[in-house]
Image 1 (tube, rainbow, N blue to C red):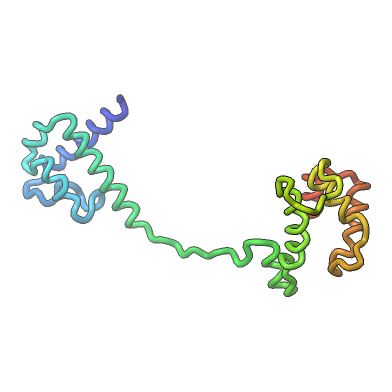
Image 2: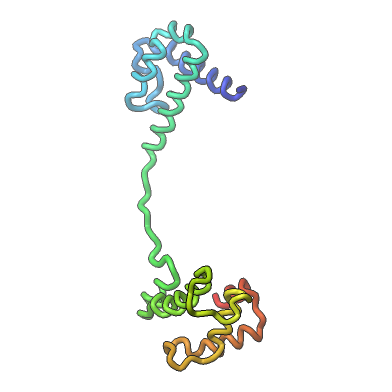
Length: 181
């Protein structure tokens, strides 16, 4: 309440000062503070002679203050030059790898992850039971891929060795992510 009253009073003083010093009504608010067609909007609320401004109610001055604040902010925003947006060249590590080596890791990894995650989150509807599902996603993945799969894609052949290394190191999932990165 105190701040609102203070802002309204300061705005009233500012506007009335300019109303009294302006003889022709055109320069009520300096162009550096108020641009465009702002004056006609306020002119309907505050008579340019300055006398009617003294007769406005507190509620009317609050309206004038809000309009004044809106116009100043609006003019300020419109006067800011926008800077061109430069989107990042690669938003994902996969994109950088694809650009650099022509390898799409999504195609490789998604096939394994989708098949693995589907029965893990299917609410018991799958026909394919996961090993060690009750021990969590990571332990279940370890159990399934710990053994080499000869029919698996070539890139997964080293997965069994990597899982053995990770299990021996006893990484937590967070530590494993950090170590992998």
